[in-house]
Amino acid sequence: MKAQLSLAAVIMTGLLASGCSQMSAQQVVEPPPAPTPDKVVLDCSKCAPAPVVTPRPVVKPRPIVRPRPQPRPPVVVHPRPQPQPRPPVVVVPPVKVPPVKAKGNYRGKIQIDQGVMKQYQQ
Image (cartoon, rainbow, N blue to C red):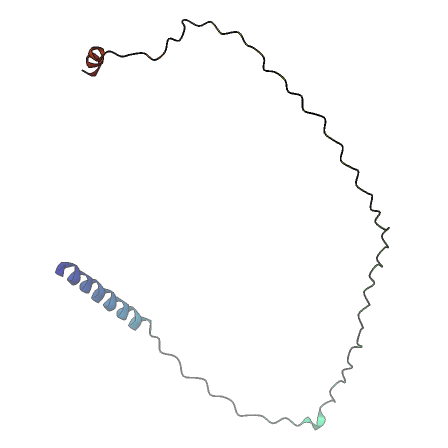
């Protein structure tokens, strides 16, 4: 813990020292400002009069011409047709399927002998 703190202090001190040395190297002496010339007063009695500027005429925007809406034809409501009665449901008897021949016939649940089970568990 102390080693990390001292290492951080040394690094910060190095950064501070290098930053200060760079700042002192960048300082440049500015030259003194040039003296301003004395003000000269002009005699405007010999000057030509300023030209007269006429304002531009105001242009009114054109009115927006929107198309008139077309009248829609009246909506004709047709009466709904009466629902047709459904045809009666015909019940179809189930189709008899002959039994499928397999390798054997089902004889019920198989009883497992405990001696045979011990042989498989080892």
